Structure formats: structure tokens, C-alpha cells
Image 1 (tube, rainbow, N blue to C red):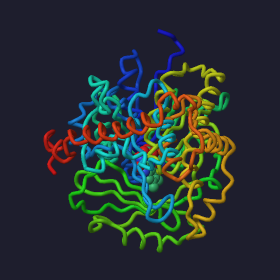
Image 2 (spheres, rainbow, N blue to C red):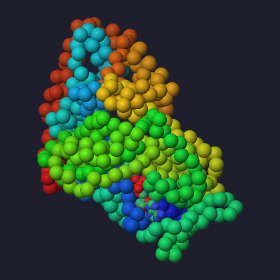
Image 3 (spheres, helix red, strand yellow):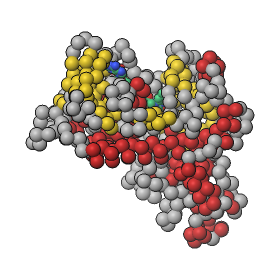
Image 4 (cartoon, rainbow, N blue to C red):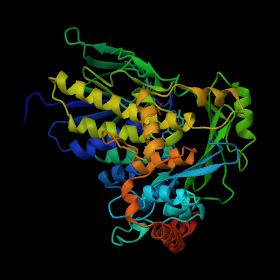
Length: 503
Ligand code: FAD
């Protein structure tokens, strides 16, 4: 056993991030001799209380924790999610879906969408949606797990995620973490004690007078960044100029029975509204720019656009889009909202916690904290944020809307340099390059670029390997296969009842 090994891990905060970290560390590192994992949280302060939609990577996280999926779905009131439907983003009255999984079928190693682009030039104006099983099945309220054992079926590459009650998920993870030995301490942290020589955090003082010492501190204290900013002064990079929304108002409402496995994002005059159908209710929220609408007006707009009676008082939230300049400083690593926040348009926050956990486990330090490794961790954190930011900005930038000052601002904003080039390459040749293993795949970029009306004037020359007639008949064949496969998927409600959910 190394004598410089980390022995005391202290997690600050018991929101979704804190309990994800506690569950993962105790699962992976729990049997390290002498390792103690302690989580400090304050019920009085509470959690942010939103965060219901996820992306497919969460399936792997749950598997890593050994979670039984039906048990988890029942415990968190979850529904399945096959993608996000964007309404009124391109122009009023328009809609498209960003699906999980893929479009089309295997096309001799060339990306399917080049044949779709060629088909458009030949006069076939069918929308991309018709080539995605996630979209066709999802819009019919159907869900099925992927079937890798059927490699020729579009079911083989279906991806899925969940929509759940984030509070119940945190509770579920807490049970797991405590079962694996994590210790929970209730109390408000009132002071952070630092070592005079190294500057590292040495201990936390609680209001009760208790003192919590640690070797490694994981800051999951939410937007306030109690340790990473309050003590270590990591600095925050503000991206409001690209992502102008800085407030939200959230309210759950009754679910009249519609459980499409799709999150919906409807563009509004000064932002957008989410709609997330869970088993027992629908989560709703208006994410907006305070420069362009008042809090009262935003709340009014939200309440006027619900599918059922509200189940609680509207809850206001304030945030700044951006990231902590260094997510790891000394012996403090920030995760969750303490590490940064990119608005929930593509449901990425919980995933960012998951990927930060994976990175921390890869770079698991000793008490010597190698600065070179810390720098690499921070560089990877930054790159991940940059990649997601560009994808989010795409949704705002590529709009035709001219109906409000907010959309005028978005349409005319100067895109980040990497994004401008990406859009230009797609418009010229239909090409999409996925860089540094970024989170969003070619399918994601394609769905939003095409969905928001960016026309590609060219396509991959190899698409001409199929004659014009073959291209059109192959496209028709794929649409038929997708439609037929969708009809074999059970309705999500039936599947949920089958696994014991009380709908
Ligand atoms: P919090 O939930 O704020 O938890 C902070 C914890 O720190 C709490 O336990 C608190 O008690 C504790 N704490 C703070 N200060 C102290 C102190 N002094 N002493 C003791 N304890 C303290 N993510 C998604 O993936 N999908 C979504 O659809 C989504 N939608 C969102 C919508 C909005 C409007 C917002 C704002 C966020 C959304 N998110 C979403 C993000 C998601 O909510 C968060 O990433 C997730 O909940 C993790 O939050 P957290 O645990 O970092 O912080």
C-alpha cells in the first residue's frame, strides 16, 4: 500500500452530483484499505431541485453502479427518452427531433446522410426524421431496448436515456453509496480551513462546531462553488455572450397520460420551454434571458403553456452559462454545478458529472497531487465544455426567427470560431467532423444542422456509387424498414406497466 495514498475523501454537497460521486467512488474504490468517503450536506440549504432529462451515457453509469434498470425506473418515476423534439426553433410552426442512435442503415461504410443529401438533389424531400427509428417510434409513444443481436435491423443501434425525478435519483444513489460505506454528515459548512504551506483545504468547519478533515475534497456544492471558488478562487469564464439565457422558472404539472419518450423544447419569445413527461407528472420550465423578458412575464408564459394543472408553485432559478477556469485546484475538484453550467437545452449537466467522475478515477491522485496531471484534467474539462457550448450555440445561431429582439440577437451573434468553420464545411460538402472524441456525434450535429434549416450544397462523391434510381429506391426501402421496425416496438406505457410501474 502506498503511504501517500488518499485516505479521506470529503464530498461537499448532496445534490445529484454529490450522490453520483459518492456512489461511484464507493463502488470503484470502496475496497481500498483505509479509504473513508464522507459526504457533507445541508438540508436547510437544499438542492437545485431540477435536472430531469438525461442522455444515453447514463445507461453506462447505472450499469457501472450495478443498478437494476426496472428497479431504478420504478424508484425514480422514470420514463424512457429517445431524443429531443425541437418546436419553433427554426421558424414558428416548424419542428424536428434530435434522436439518439443513428439515421438510416449501413451504406457500405459511407455515412447515410450523404445519400439522403443526394436524394434531396434528386427531388426526394423526405425529412431526415423518417430515417430514424428513435423518431418514428418515439412519436408514436413507443419504446424498445436496442437489439445488438439483430445487426441488420435499425433496432440494433437504438440509443436511449431516461427522464426522471432528480430528487428521487439522488435518494436512490444515496442508498447505494451508504450501502457501500459512504458516511453522510448533515450540517452547514461555515468555514474552510486551509493548510498554511500548501494552500490545500485541510478541513471544513460546520455550524454545529464539528470539523471534517480530508485529503481530497470534491466540491459538489452547486452554483456557489463553496470550495473551488470560495476558498481556491479558481475563476469563472462567463459565456453569456454566446448563451444568453440566464434564468429559468420551473413548475411540474399533471400528466394527462401522454408519455412520449421524448423531451420537448419549444422556443419562446425570449428563450425556450422544456417539457419532460415522467410517469406521474410532467416537468416544465422556461429558460430565458433576463435582458429580454421580466421574471413575471416568463412565469406567466410558462403557466399559460402547460398541458395540465400545476402541481407546485413556480420555482425561479438564476445561473450564468460558463465554466470554472480550473475545475481542479490543489486538493479540490469541482463537479456538477460547482464546476460550471451549460443551460439544459441538450440535457448535458448530469452527463458532465459522470464524465468528471470517470476522469477523476483515471487521474486518481496521491496526497502529492501531481500538478501535471491536474493540468491535464483541467484541459480535458475545458475541452468538454467548449465542445458542448458550440453545439448549444448552433441551436440559437441557426434560426430564421426574426419575431423578437431575443431571436434577432441569437441569429446575428458572432459564433465561436470552431463552430463557424463546422457550419461552413457542412454547408459546402455535407461533411461533419467529430473532433477530440466530443460528446455529440455526427448524428447529433446532423440532426440539428439539418433540422435548423442549414442546407448542404454537396455530398460525399462516393454516394455516386449508387445510381440515381438506386439511391431513391434505397431511401424508400430504408423508410419502409424503419416504419416496420417502429410498429414492432411496444408502447412505452405498456412496457412501463410490464416492469411494475404504477401508471
Ligand atoms: P445542487 O443540487 O445545488 O446541490 C448542492 C448541494 O450542496 C446541496 O446538497 C446543498 O445542500 C450543498 N451545500 C451547498 N452549500 C453548502 C454548505 N455551506 N454547507 C453544506 N452543504 C452545502 N441537468 C440535466 O442533466 N438535465 C436537465 O434536464 C437539467 N435541467 C436543468 C434545468 C435548470 C433550470 C438548471 C438550473 C439545471 C438543470 N440541470 C439539468 C442541471 C442539474 O440540475 C444539476 O447538474 C444537478 O442537479 C446537479 O446539481 P448539483 O448536485 O451540482 O448542485
